[in-house]
Image (cartoon, rainbow, N blue to C red; front, side, top):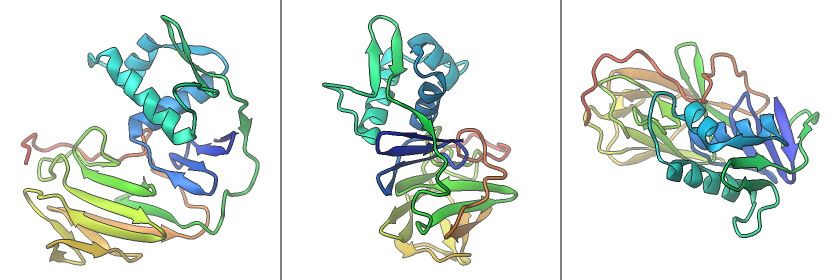
Amino acid sequence: MRKRFGKCVFDSETRELVRGKRAVALTPKALSLLELLLERAPRAVSKEEIQSLLWPDTFVSEANVTNLISEVRAAVGDPSSRPRLIRTVHRFGYRFQGKVDEDRVEEVSAARPLYRLVLGNRKIPLVEGENILGRHPDAQARIEQGAVSRRHARISIEAGRAVIEDLKSRNGTFLRGRRLNGSAVLRNGDEIGLGAVRMTFRVFTGPASTEGLSQDGSDSIPSTDSTDR
């Protein structure tokens, strides 16, 4: 579902936020928080509920929620000093008070390329800016396998150009069958290897299929080891 508010459009299927004509990079948990606030608008959501939904079975401090709220406000252009969209409900939580409409425009800037990593039958969305690949909980492409480091590699997307680089991973990052030493520009159809895990980099110039996207916009495969780099 696509929801429009102010100068922004949030697409819950592709897990993307577009502000004006540019995609805005957000961590997976910040995207989930924005989606939650939009779904509940104009009702308030308690801090306890946010914590339980975003960090199930894990204790986190209220500072984690506060930091995510700051990230979302910055992404949608809502100053913390005088918020117009996301209001703090004293001693309770937060609520989205801006006007929210379902977006019925076919596409926001339909010619804007969409970038994906294809891993098996899953498509992992990549956003403008930095995309971390690895086992870290906040990685854009989360891959829970012991051969993959927590922060294994990075794909940076800017001005229609995608660049991949290894982040000193234990088992190396491979592009077109060769181990990376430094950074390299990605092309549509390139095979990427994170250790023994193989995936394909794809560029779509029209609406991209969302089949196989996981709920948080990242991807996981069964863990075989918990050893870190």
